[in-house]
Length: 614
Image 1 (spheres, rainbow, N blue to C red):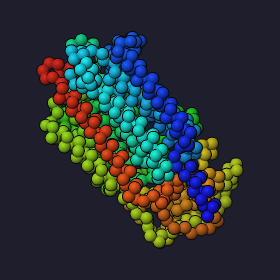
Image 2 (cartoon, rainbow, N blue to C red):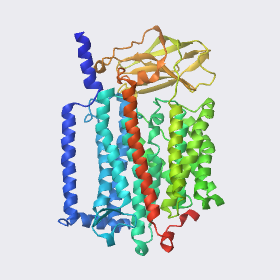
Image 3 (cartoon, one colour):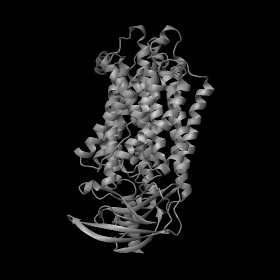
Image 4 (cartoon, rainbow, N blue to C red):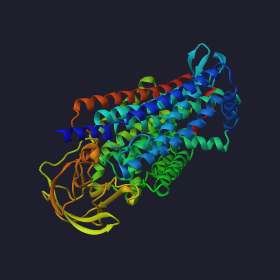
């Protein structure tokens, strides 16, 4: 009993939240930095300092936008790229090396935390910089904070998204203390961080829009540099909407493959339709190319440069070409219909074009058996996100939105349909009484690492269809210096339910090596070798010469750190709280778009950006 108690205490320390000294240290540091920034903001607004105004004015001259737009946007671009790099690196580190010893032991966390914090600061900066009264408020849609203080909508939304993302950090620690560590991108508090950062890209577009209109007739002609920033903004939206796919990009997805086409179609439809409406001809393609360049640079830095597991990413070029072709038709004059049709094209032909790239380079290609359910999920989501992208484009182009009931109804319907598709995708089956008999043969070792090949017989032999999504061996968390900590082998089919390795797999050290089976709604796994993990009280699962083991839910192996003893009701309550906060954030982003559109005047000033007809 004493030994089990000690194991439990260690598990709580290592598999749960961060050490208290780190929590206290981070809290003190955050409080000091926040107090310093509040003090600077008070000094600026009380006109006791001028250096912030001078810096903002200089940025405004360079960016050809008001100071309260230029400086926050420059800070935001730096922050979002910093957060993106840290995020990709962090996922890669977890895949290759496993969980952290603590939040301060992972170098990627510094980039994520700094990026999210300065997204929040950029939003607050946009709110603090304007010093004028009602006659000099930042644009017609500005929100009154006090009698003499008006804040731009984009700044408010950006600060809100940044704050929502930042709250994910302390809540993540609380979540781990209650439920153990969910080593997956799709942990609820992880989704808060990436969701807040992703949606903040829309706030940057809002802010630039307000600055453009605040300048009125004095607005200079947009130069090449500013045009590039605007295209980059839509590339940022495309990447921001794509972050939910990262586990698929690395080949360690913990959920059914049917999610991947839906996520790709949703990101493409929303970002590319909006880009084409606002920026005109070629914008969808340019946004996709810039997204490829930015993601490519980050992936190169994380993979070959830092020697961590590599990730691929969708190209979106097929979807971009489809949007541009549809824009050549009269549908462009009816933006919402243009978005609906564009989403339909992306959710069908666009996904087929993307599959050519995915099947060529991704660790897990799309089998033909995937398509029926994938289309059922992806098409309605893409159609509706395309319509939402059209609404965003209309706001940025100063075109009047449809009636309030229609606009809000479209957004609400999109959320409901995405929720329904997600609920379907989360359903999976674990075959009862199914087993795998695994016979291992020793292979030449790789240094001190034991290597084996496997001959696997499933029982019953007809457990899988003739065209499963995958039957593979995954080895991960073997250590960054050890094959980059990631191994994937798609097994060769020998006969009914009979499979064989195509290359030696790791079976020692810190590796977690398992047989993965995904066939329609069947998603299950069998451990081949799991390293002992005293930190969570998990014993070693040895790689025996011959063994027969039952299939279990794959997530119980991939997320060993999660506590199995927590009531499902408590988990559900936690997820619902995070869901509510997410819906509040989406409502805030929607409110911002509606306020911008409602506040824009009609007439000649509303024709500053008639690019929807270009």
